[in-house]
Image (cartoon, rainbow, N blue to C red; front, side, top):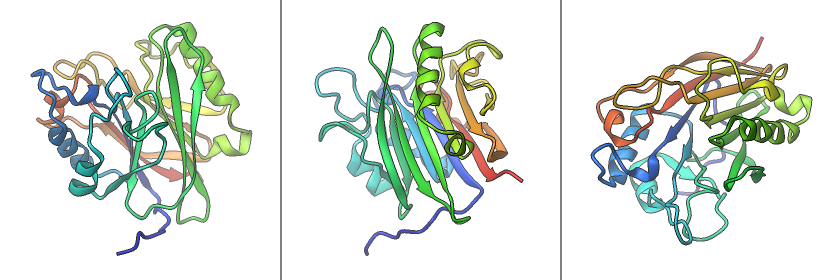
Length: 241
């Protein structure tokens, strides 16, 4: 059957999940378990962090064939080689048949190699939503510079329908997000780290003024509590007004 080119309906469910290279709290690398958690969320688009292994050519921690066989999601073409799932460990999965209007790798400043990924998808209201997947630096000064770089990538009109989501690595509830002030609302749906005893909302969503959160939360199933050191987050994005 040829792939559909359907626009995604609003509200659009998006999710973010730092899968720790598919290594769970039992120290077993279990890609099928991660896939089960992703399926539990039921998102239209999933942004992953640490989706690739760290060494060598950074082969995928989640095999593409497994994703294609066990989910209704497909991998957006963001990798710089034939073995990785994404860029600097950031990958994006979208529901099969989604209209992908653009995709891009974004190099970020920092002491350690970091990058973001951008995917623009069509929606049934005739406009696009842009998703930016991030895994920000460990140091706040570099996180701020990285957010400045991402924010500068989009004009005012584009940022209104943009969602930045991922592992922000920020323990504070109100500091570190200054580069996004004015154009984005930053939301932590709940505590996500450490999955065994969540104490910090490191995983966040920042959305432009043209979008609103219809609902959002942390996915806390029994599988999610052991498949990574982060719990996944989800959000139902709707058009504002």
